[in-house]
Length: 167
Image 1 (tube, rainbow, N blue to C red):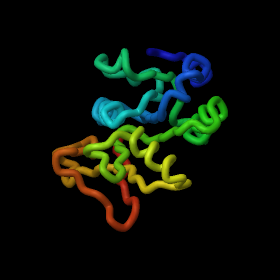
Image 2: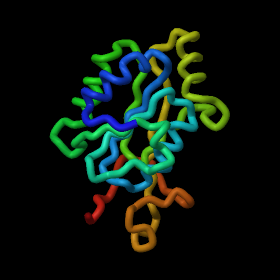
Image 3: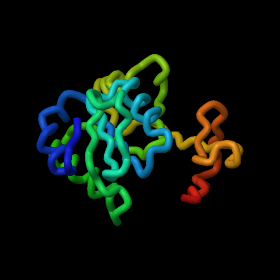
Image 4: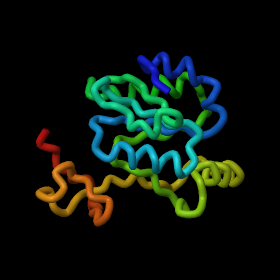
C-alpha cells in the first residue's frame, strides 16, 4: 500500500486508526527495515506505516501489510510534524513511533500483543505504561558496518551513545 504523501496516508487510513494501535516507522535508511516492520506487525499493531524517502524501497513481503508513505524523514522537525499530523486525524487513538532498527518491548511482550497491553491499561484506568524502545548496537563495527547485529546486540545502560554511521 503506497501513499504519495503523509496527507494521502492520513486521508486513506483515517477510519483505520480506531481499529487498533498504529505504528509509525521513520525509515532513515534501509538498515534492518524488514526486521523492524516484521517485529511491529508480529506484536499486533493494527496499522504499520513506514515513512521513508522515495529512494528507500519497501521490502516486497510487506507490500500488502505495511503502508509505505513517501516522506522526507531528514527534514527539520520531520518526526514531530508527522506524529502531530496523524494524532490530529484521530484524537484518542494510540500511536507509537520509532526509527528503523528500533523495537518496542513491554512487559510480557513475548506472550502478549500490544493490543492486550493497551486493553489491560484501559481496564486498570492507567494513564501511563512502562515500555522500552530498544536500539541495538553491534559490538564490532568492522564486522557489522551498518552498526546493527541482532544476534549479539549491545545496549547502553547509562544513556544514549550511538555512533553515527559513516555514510
